[in-house]
Amino acid sequence: MGSYSHRLLDEIAPSDEERKRETKMAKLIYSSITSLDGYIEDENGNFDWGEPDEEVHSFINDLQRPVGIYLYGRRLYEVMVAWETLPLTDQSPYMRDFAEIWQTADKIVYSRTFQTVSSARTRIEREFDPEAVRQMKVEAERDLTIGGPGLAAQAFTAGLVDECHLFIAPIVIGGGKRSLPNNISVRLDLVDERRFGSGMVHLRYRIRT
Image 1: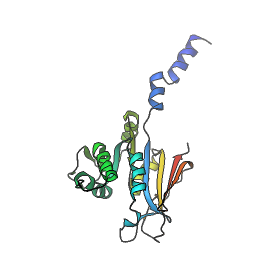
Image 2: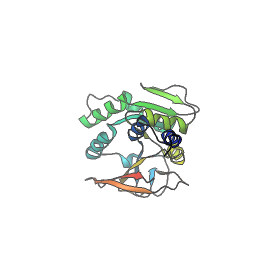
Image 3: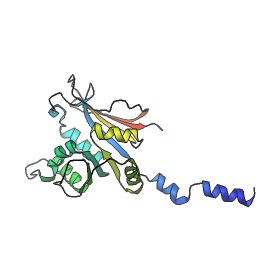
Image 4: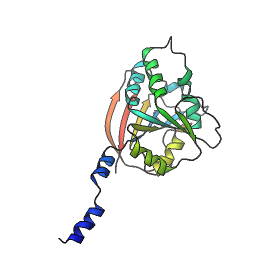
């Protein structure tokens, strides 16, 4: 093979640095607690039926421990920000553990109307930019999670989601906000499952590429 062909192959083939970067690319994980019929909240906006007990919460803590960045829409951020100021003195160890995990992670809130945030390590972005998130995955040393089906729909559409972690609560609520976005079709591989004493089940899926 001539020198020109070798040079052409060198230009096409990824460098060692690029291979290393691709291998170490952080994952974007969509995680949600959902009813058996696929809703994250009922028609009145209630989701207390999905509150995790100690066993489930401790498991969630371990899943969230490697996460470095949370991507939120405004509504979900307004729910989660309570972990910034929740009085923890009388809380159980697993609640204090989650609060510390949440507080030490970076947060990005996607909102066109939000003006200020009330938690540390948090910034606002006006638009969800798939290329910016893709670059975050390349540069991040820890995984990212995305919450809320509306925001997640944009990530699914852009092909950014790597895994889905679904906690299925043992309840049928008949309607409300869907846990997975409409008009999105992806193939999944089940890579892990876990049953809990409460009847909740955790299913971990990898997006098939």
